[in-house]
Image (cartoon, rainbow, N blue to C red; front, top):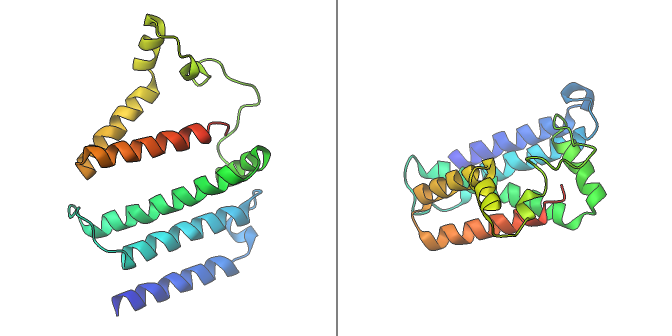
Length: 172
């Protein structure tokens, strides 16, 4: 009964989203793509919350982890889309999905440039990497993964796959 009620609510929500005119929701370019992406997110999160099995993580509640699983599936699907489309189309899709984020027209060589690709092992490079915001973000990510998963092998797999995704989507 619970799954049937939630499924009906999900279906009605998707129908309402599909039948709503573009002008009602948003008039910026890419409204239909944004609506489809967010509808897919809601569908995957709801489906995973209702139908996936509980894992080993029980705190705060198994449904939280099932929802996060659905969110990760959505992210992986978007990453797969961006991996198979040409670069120009990927840039357009990113602009449609996140219209508030402006893409710089020139290459920034300062903080967000290509400093991370400098592979020379010297004091300046090591210092710059250790005190960059990206290093802090990776440390926070490792801390969160170890807190949630508490398994070194699984964290290494997740981190490796995330780094591979980060490197392949670097052109965006």
